Image (cartoon, rainbow, N blue to C red; front, side, top):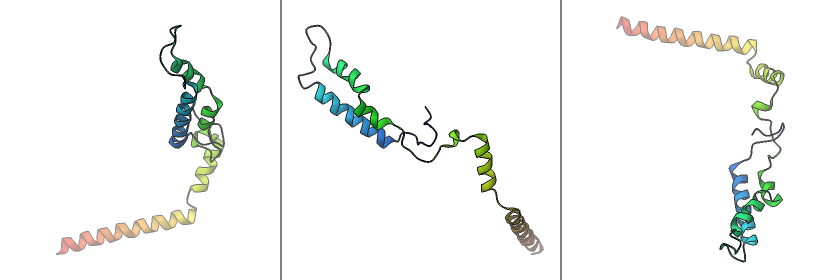
Length: 116
């Protein structure tokens, strides 16, 4: 699922921290053992159900504030960003002039090789 606007995706570090906290929770909840109880239930299954919704575990999986992801940007923002990143007209002319010089140099080298 995509994070809310203005938030980053959950990182692997956050996932690892949540995993560690999940196991700490399971350790605390199953101190009496994990063998099947007389009623046929397993303490670890019950503890896991509770741990998955425990605030101390879920806290690690919350998206952190940060730069907006590209999917969160509105089309207007994307278009504005594209135009801001585009080279100016002067820069485009300079790029084209340099490309022409390179072509001329390549053609000059090819012609010189042909003459030899």
